[in-house]
Image (cartoon, rainbow, N blue to C red):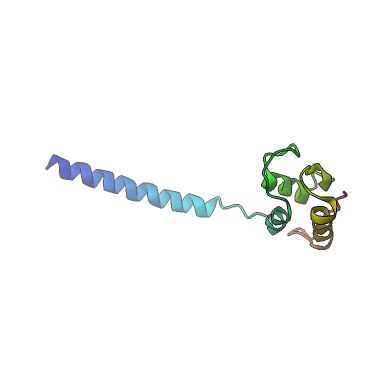
Length: 105
């Protein structure tokens, strides 16, 4: 009988914690700017960290936020291949706030 109570107690605890996880994931959901994913796809995706960021996703976030103004910080990218589409995309695509980002080579 003691084993049954232990199993029921653990099952009840698992259900309560599962419901709390779902509630917190709904309450604290953060919407990311869709331009970050698009710029990340345009980067070489080596995740080398040569730009001074943690990886290509972090570099894409910095470009979209305007923290980094030069796309050439990405050392492994090629100027004619990787930089021009990123510059054109950020200049022509407004974010959720309605503003575009101006970056240079």
